[in-house]
Length: 426
Image (tube, rainbow, N blue to C red):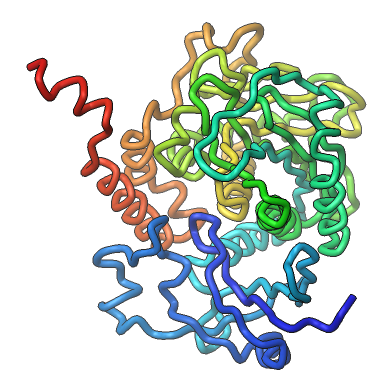
């Protein structure tokens, strides 16, 4: 590989967007040495690229700079760029090196550290769905075929480039499959013993997929429901819990799994209403969470039940794990894993068993429901103090304000359909 000409140094913001600077490669040593600075408010820029109004991180504090420190991966090659380039993922910290309260990777690190203090670690893997489309608002081609090899082969060059980039990033990318929508695919990322590494892999993977697609004249979309009549895109997480000896605490040798598994299920279900804003952070997210769509609507769990929010897969008891199926592909991987670990901590603290597992169609099981829309999710997130206890009160305050600002921006717009319906008829 040629020596890098440019570097891109960036922080992942609360919406999962990388924000930073394009710099000459001569600045690499400075960046890797922690010499780069950006405003503390950068992780809390909203989806439109604007500051959150009345944020305590902006005018109230003078919009001060913070330290931008490199993560464990260092500089990563961007093989798809037109010129030799490297990408340096960063985290935000205060002058004394203490973590930023609103940097999503730092938030996950804090929750993971509390789990580690109990002598526990989570083994986590993600499954990520996305669409490949031609640039512009073009609907997907007809003829979607679940697991159809021809659909994957049509984009062979794309997948070869993605796998090469993943190898360069040390991302354990597994099988690629054709999903339920035309032009929709899924690539599984293999499990690892470090939640931070798993979240890094997911966040970097999205950047790789979008970058490779753009380089090949395509667009990659992680929008959860880009087409009303087509399948939505999810971000499923599989995880188990290990002790210091490496024993899977969800495994008791039975098909049902251990009491610890059920305690964690209960904690996840307990935090699920408030956590929905993390799982489904945008207006479009709620178009995916619909009945009979393979995306859950009820707050429940089940064994080998893909209509449930939490699924306990079958197979060897040694691999007993929980699959979390609520999040859309637009979820921030760092925040997603952080709230899942928060649910684990909640369950371990309460040591209570959950409701009975759902058998059959969870959409018809009379379960308590997830927040039905964006406004309800914002309200549930704001009203519940459990996430503040597990994550960070300042993060919860800023994130809720950011989502409300985004909500209001959409509420102030009228669609052509609304105007056409009412303009002369009422």
